[in-house]
Length: 588
Ligand SMILES: *[C@@H]1O[C@H](CO)[C@@H](O)[C@H](O)[C@H]1NC(C)=O
Ligand SMILES: *[C@@H]1O[C@H](CO)[C@@H](O)[C@H](O)[C@H]1NC(C)=O
Ligand SMILES: *[C@@H]1O[C@H](CO)[C@@H](O)[C@H](O)[C@H]1NC(C)=O
Ligand SMILES: *[C@@H]1O[C@H](CO)[C@@H](O)[C@H](O)[C@H]1NC(C)=O
Ligand SMILES: *[C@@H]1O[C@H](CO)[C@@H](O)[C@H](O)[C@H]1NC(C)=O
Ligand SMILES: *[C@@H]1O[C@H](CO)[C@@H](O)[C@H](O)[C@H]1NC(C)=O
Ligand SMILES: *[C@@H]1O[C@H](CO)[C@@H](O)[C@H](O)[C@H]1NC(C)=O
Ligand SMILES: *[C@@H]1O[C@H](CO)[C@@H](O)[C@H](O)[C@H]1NC(C)=O
Ligand SMILES: *[C@@H]1O[C@H](CO)[C@@H](O)[C@H](O)[C@H]1NC(C)=O
Ligand SMILES: *[C@@H]1O[C@H](CO)[C@@H](O)[C@H](O)[C@H]1NC(C)=O
Ligand SMILES: *[C@@H]1O[C@H](CO)[C@@H](O)[C@H](O)[C@H]1NC(C)=O
Image (cartoon, rainbow, N blue to C red; front, top):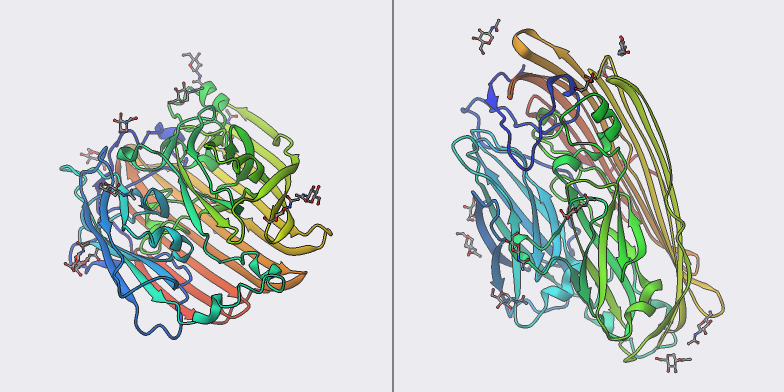
């Protein structure tokens, strides 16, 4: 079975740029061809672990925070709603869940969106591409870690931004409902024993999931264009000025980002020399390496290696119907432990926290939340940065090409070690942060550019140790990411100026985290989310004439208590299999 409805996919500036015909095996952005109109609205999905709800929480409060239709919203400020917490739902909460429901019908590109609370981002999401009969989906995200911003007594402003274009061709209006669910904390004796300070020394070190006391948005002050920063090139950096409480003893910067326009498929971009020598008109260049770094007062403070999220119109839109690409509905955020740098921030003054994108071209949307934990027994914490080892990125690039045939390889590595002590009521603790980044990419063109192979291997590891003044490691937290990606695309010229793109894709997100106290394992988790897709589409000028695709996905999550596995299979827009089990084939 194949889809055979010709639908226009037109140039939509500034988000899309064309490739000349002969360079079209580049991953590009396409509009999903419409399904026959008789079909019912279809549910789209992106498997994730359902929020873990307290078993005793029979009654919870649900607040409808925002209902909004994103029609022709390009250039408009975010939709905003002020809401107060219902008195019947006082903090503390054991869980808070964000529920976003979206529906759309017509023709439309995928769009990027975000939700902020008082300028702090709580969700980065993108949309499915609609069909004439309609699509809908729901994102449920555990947002308990943002509890401190939700419990502000005067109420909070929730904003959602989604830049959409609606006209005669693009008719899809994204209708959204945002609600929040608050689950009461039934276990009230949790906080009773805090006075017993000595015994609690180790316990006071915040556990993996303990929400911060204060969250400061590191985002754009000009909310009329969204709270995110738009980073257009590698020399551009954006920052926010923030002042932190002087009794902060732990600081974690949570970074959100997404790549768009010329950098949407950054992992497949060739170097500029290839584009120039072949007289290509594309601006998708600057090679296939990207890295997002954070700065404090202009000083490098850590780095993240981005997981390549593929949006629903990307590469071959038939791949992402009805199961979207990994993370497309809930893009990952990344944590950087800035505790070793507290010396620079604890003086009661304003400081700049900023971002840049190594090798970035237009554009990347970045912002962050600074999560802060406060010493409740002391008004000031003193700190000192004692080790700052941040050698420059070591990168080797091999570029070999003859006309449109070529092989481009990048090997990059970085090792970072920051260490700082801080004196608080918990004693004199030293935080050691180690980061290791390993990046390997190969972009290959054969057959005069009509065959393109993209191979990406990113590895990214962070280890945080907290030691006391006797050098005993009180706690240790290790977090690893691995993101292998392979995209093979063949272009065959057809009759009448048509061409056929055949693509094979394999994409995986591996994440492993472990938390130890006094070298005893306290919690650990593994996530493995693997997607494979293959198919073809026939394209003429700007129209998808026909195509066929199949995909399969295995999502597995394992921690000390549970395993959650979900298998999905789809073909030509139909979900053939969706089964949930607890038979994980993962091991620590
Ligand atoms: C959203 O719509 C529902 C159903 O009409 C309504 O109950 C709810 O109050 C609305 N929420 C907001 C924030 O307007
Ligand atoms: C939003 O809520 C209203 C009222 O419950 C419902 O009719 C509508 O279908 C919802 N929209 C979405 C996108 O879920
Ligand atoms: C929320 O929005 C209102 C009106 O737009 C504004 O007056 C208020 O300062 C905002 N509150 C916060 C906490 O940003
Ligand atoms: C804020 O952003 C809007 C939209 O991009 C722009 O028109 C306006 O000039 C900006 N304002 C400031 C103060 O930068
Ligand atoms: C980077 O982008 C900024 C903002 O668009 C621009 O002013 C600047 O000239 C650009 N720099 C380079 C090197 O392209
Ligand atoms: C690119 O354009 C230049 C100048 O027009 C021309 O000399 C050269 O042969 C062209 N190269 C290719 C590969 O078409
Ligand atoms: C360390 O912090 C504690 C509690 O804040 C304080 O009482 C003590 O004087 C500090 N020690 C030093 C050497 O500053
Ligand atoms: C490019 O490679 C193909 C084989 O993949 C070969 O047939 C073709 O001649 C090569 N083109 C050039 C200009 O070398
Ligand atoms: C904390 O410990 C470090 C070494 O572990 C030491 O150099 C520093 O002086 C201590 N700070 C305080 C305030 O005692
Ligand atoms: C995709 O995989 C199939 C089966 O392994 C293979 O026959 C085909 O050549 C591959 N296509 C591309 C574009 O690599
Ligand atoms: C080629 O395209 C033209 C215009 O789109 C159409 O009229 C013609 O029938 C097509 N020819 C073939 C062989 O498909």
